[in-house]
Length: 61
Image 1: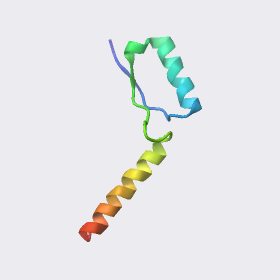
Image 2: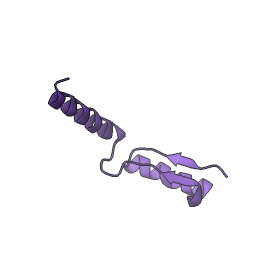
Image 3: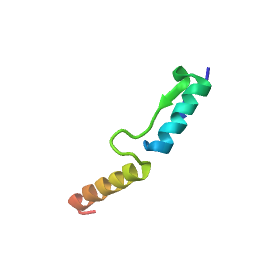
Image 4: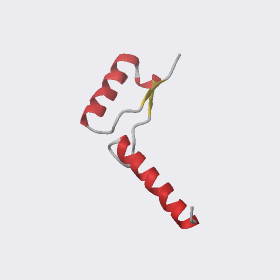
């Protein structure tokens, strides 16, 4: 049995879509990969880029 990765935003629309996936395919087939600290994957990416830039600045790169 294949696993379905649910990597939608953790907002109202994403939650609705995630619930529909669970209803249609069963909760045991869904791998919930929604962001936990932020509601939006763009916010997660911005934090990653900012962190990397800070590290590079500290290293003088």
